[in-house]
Length: 464
Image (tube, rainbow, N blue to C red):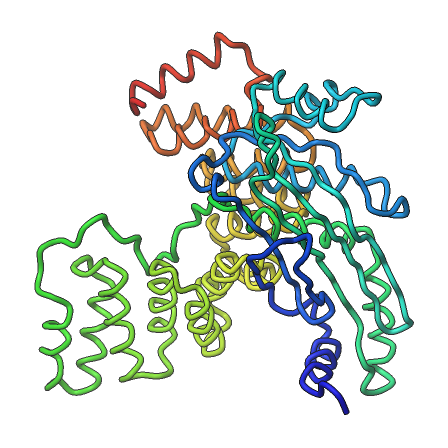
């Protein structure tokens, strides 16, 4: 038998009913680099040297084309990319403004120049939908969406970034008994619903946006309540290793209590120190979920999300009923750009008698990233019921409305986020909301006088 490892991987993915194997980001020329999307979700991209020296300060999505007329219409794909670019904070030209400038009789090059000149945005995105299929084989289904994007600097005509990806969502599998056969048919059929097709399109958009250099989702979800954010610098105290060495002669139970007290206190807040304490606690008590959660939080802060994920999984395995453990697991999935996988733990986190506003915020963020903006609105609305007028919740709720295409409501909500932040003298939150307000072109929904007044009030608490 040829290529048995590949065959095994294919069977493993099918039997496990995975929506695709782990996403791999490959640097290479998207026009020539080959990839086998059946064996994994591969994102291929390449940035020109001038991208690093002169990155885009604004972006506009030109109307998408198709490699095959059977893939049309593709307005939903273009809107999905716009929705996923919005949270990165880069200035975006509204789709409506671009469409109004397009001359159907002009060449693509002339339309690029016309849009760039009229919007004062020199970097525009062209996109071609390269794959769009749904297939059904009784107990197995597959939904595919592919695109090839280019960022063009219109003043030079050069492509400064190029990316291609095909998102594949599979469902169903090999039936193991009559009961699973029935379940497989139901599952595979459900995979063809509009929601699943929409999720695949948003997977495509999210992953390609993630591959664009220097663009990242705004991720302001704080850590769990028991794991406080690290300060800019460590307060003067004894080195953590000296503290740990001082416990060596203690009995395990006393040592454990001292380590838990250290995690609860404020003496060691830097991630590397908290990781050392958590690892010491693990060695004494391998069934202590707090140790794994703290270590997971520290690993995320140290930019090691894969290790953070494994630690969070261990905490959930020990105590799945704790919503903070579920929250941390979902949070690590978001850091790994696996928003779909984050949904289940976040749903578990909010399914307790007294859920936290923070956990609804996390759920809403995952819904936004998977394109389920209506569900995101519901999650952020619930969060605001528990924590009224929270600027973060309002800002993310506004982003959800942008994804739904309701820019008027988005402008009202993000404006409220700015006003509340100003009233609280929260310069960081106010500036962030203002930047996103402009990035999403929502400033067109208020008068120039009002926008200027808001900017002046923010400058009083946060000079630029």
